[in-house]
Length: 96
Image 1 (cartoon, rainbow, N blue to C red):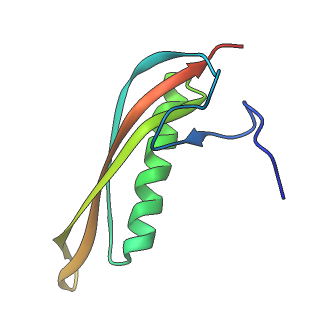
Image 2 (cartoon, rainbow, N blue to C red; image 1 turned 120 degrees about the vertical axis):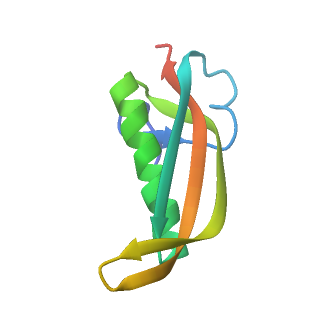
């Protein structure tokens, strides 16, 4: 069983940072990912949020949302159905 310590990894939450945690809002971030596997598409979108937040200098992404839909990707061997995920959240810097 582990514990969370600010600064060890990127924190992503669909809500706030927690009771008593103060932060500065850096801005909104967005990501779009697609893959034939729905779980992989969700992970790809979450990783894109992490990358965008890191480039903002953020410690966390709060109030994240994910939306999905079936889509068609054109490839070398014809069309393929994929799972497209749109994600967004607020990048924040934790006040220490």
